[in-house]
Structures are given as C-alpha cells and as structure tokens.
Image (cartoon, rainbow, N blue to C red; front, top):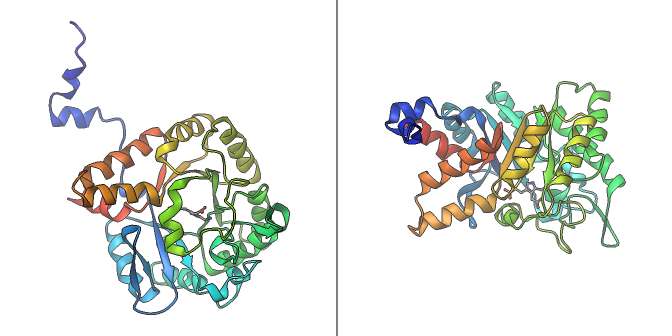
Length: 323
Ligand code: PBG
C-alpha cells in the first residue's frame, strides 16, 4: 500500500492541520423568543433550555452571549391572542413591544446585529403567514402587509429583515418599499427555500402560532423537491435578497450544498426547533451525548455549505468553543 489515508489522521495536530471545515461563534445566529411584560423567563416545554424572555430579563442574557462571541440574533415575538387579527395589524402598530425590544437592544448594544422575522403568523388570528380568505392564502394582498411590517422594523433599527412567509414576489416588494423609505442599508436574508416541515412544532408552541385551520403546503415547499429550490433562490436574488436561507437544515443538506454551488450570495441554514428538540430529548434520556451530537450536527450543516447557521444551540456551542 503506498496510499494510507490514516497517516493524515495519526495525531491531533495533523488532524487539526488538515481539517476542512471550521465553525466559529461568528457563524452562529441565535433565535430568541420574546414576550411582553417584566420578569419573564419562561421555559418552552417542547424546547428545553430555551425561553420566552421579557426585555429586562433578556438584557443580561444577551450581554453574556455577546461575551461568548455571538453577535447576531433573530427575534420572534409571542403575541397575546387579543392583539391578533386577520390582517396582522399589530405587527406594524406603534405600541408593538417587539419594535421596542429592537430599539432597546440596539441602544444598549450598538455593535449587535439584529434580524427580524417577516411573516403574518405571530400576529394573525388565522395563524398563517399570509392573508386568509375562504380558506385560501391570498398572495398579492399579503405583500403590502409584509411591507408595512418591514418598514416598522426598519424604523426601529433592525439590521436584517427575514421574510419567512414564502409569498411570491415578497422580496422585491419589500426591497422597493425599503428603498423608497430610504432604508437602503437594511439587508434582506430571505427564507428562500422553506419546506412545509414537521420539525417546526416546538417553535409554534413557543409562539402559540400554529395554523387554526389547514396547513402551510400551498406556500411552503414540498420536502420531496430539490430542483424547485433553485427557482426560489434565483427569484430572491433577482428581487434583491442579500443572503438566502434553507430551512430546515438537517434533512436538507443536499439543498444547502446545491445552492452553495450554484449561487455566489451567502447561504445560511436554519437548524430548526424540532431538530434541536430531538437532541435535547435524547440527551436528557442519556441516549446521546449532548455536546458531541450538537457539534456534529452544526459542523455537518457548515460542511454542506452554510455560511451562517440559525440555531438554538448557539449559546451552548459558543460556550463549548471557549472551553
Ligand atoms: C414563521 C416561522 C416558523 C419558523 C420560523 N419562522 C414556523 C412556521 O413556518 O410555521 C420555524 C422555526 C423553528 O421551527 O425553529 N413564519
């Protein structure tokens, strides 16, 4: 044998030298659930280790995470049922606490990068990402609502908008609205390739945002499709998206890889709630090693081609890197 691949694995220093994939805290985006009020840190039952925070409790937590090197956060609001309506009007209301949280965080931590979620579901009495009429999701009438939501978030100081709604044409519509309002510096990270996945369960528990009727299959993609992802990605780039996202991550590593190969914009992936919940559950049972499985999962997403990863593991992984 003149070729023995094991020689390049013979000790830790050589393994480190030839390591192909590196993952640092700078690649992580930490999803945070928000609730209006004071003194709230309430654990999400189906997503142990993750909480709904009121802003006063969140500030010291963010300070700790920034010290760990996590600079980017994506914020999700849990909205009281009485404030929800068919047109998600609270999403752009001046007394929406979500907008206050953005302002407070940017004020307290000017170096932080904040990303939003742009979709109707947390604010919609129907629990859908778009406007519902006679059981149908009305694409074009949803766009102005998303634009109003986007402008309100931009005014509050958001750095990156994250349209997660999967309506056709929304990236271009939002980009134009932003530019007309002089928010040319606000970025768009589009949830370009978002599948109708069974892995969003814990997230919908956290926000109480599950659809009241029907499912999301007329707008989120069919998990069986890979080539269709290229259509979505190409449209979003043409419409002005700065970065594209694939969601979920683990079952869709092939999709991440094919987007990375075909497009030059940064590609991110959302390691969604259900993917993390599986690891929490198995490790709490002693069936899997938490730190090792978490690290392997995140590394695989990065290896597939993700520049950034949205993950509930962000804090624990960054802590592990410091050790
Ligand atoms: C809402 C939204 C969802 C997630 C992020 N934004 C849920 C959904 O589409 O039903 C899921 C994230 C996760 O499961 O961690 N537009």
